[in-house]
Amino acid sequence: MSVWTVKGGRHGEREERCLEHSVIGGGWEDIPSLIDVESKEELSALCEKAAPSWSTKTRANYVAQLWSLRERMQDGELVVLPLKTSGTIAVGRLSGPYAYRDDLGADFKHTRAVDWLKTDVPRDSFDQDLLYSFGAFLTIGRVQRENAERRVLAAIGEPVATPEERSPEDEAPEAEASPDPSQLARDQIRQHITQSIAGHDLADLVGAIFEARGFSVTVSAPGPDGGVDLLMGSGATGRESPRVVAQVKTGQAGLDQYRAILGLKDRLGADQGLLVAWRGFQGKVKTEARGDHFSMVVWDADDLLDALFGAYDAIRGDIRSRLPLQRTWVLVHNGD
Image (cartoon, rainbow, N blue to C red; front, side, top):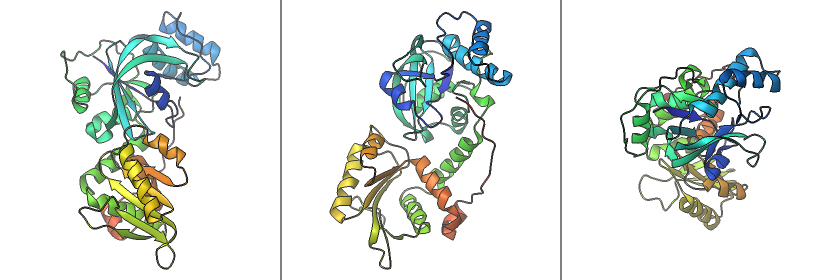
């Protein structure tokens, strides 16, 4: 059976609705309902009339994705939703036909129902070639990697009930055809850090980022730390505001860990707490953190990479030698 990758918006703006309402899909706000569309040719004519500003190439791309959503995706097939908002990946099975909905927002009209199997799978649970496919520019694409279904199910600990069958349909947009070079680079850097900067060294990396930002940093020694990995402050003594207390986890973190570091921040008199979870967050950690915007910061792997890239020019030499990076500019392709 096919495996599909679906995006929740360029910045993850549809992700929470995908998980809450058990749906996947896209915006294409100019395109009306596809319920009565009976062929790809009819869909192309509809798109040409509804969105005349689209170029021929853009229209062909979007028609292929919408037709996959409308017709090619079959109930029971796997769907992978990379989550920008948590740094993890959701995996589910399609469970209903195409539906045009008015209750999810103007940017989320064209949908399919899905039963989520796991919604917080760490990215490094998947093989690198699968991550390449998950990082494609397409909003909707079919993953063509060998044994993709078996490997995705193995990554989330689910059994495979039947031998995998490759769909004879060759016209679905393939996720491999248009990889996002920025995402590929991030995945490679993420993998390198996972392999070479594990355990307590990850806290040292976070500390080095803050040192490059002008903070004085105290890193706790390896071993039991009472929930504190880093104490960071400003001024001549390194104890002046802003003062930050941080916990760095190489795995995932949930609300218990979040609330623990929030309590430590208050007990130690820090201005801000920082919780870093390399493999992402479980539950509604980021949602709760938005309510503590000025007192708590949470970083998943992508947030840490953003901070690293921003501080890299001023970061310590030993970090640069372990993480030799070079800035590269690429052309960004616009899409839904």
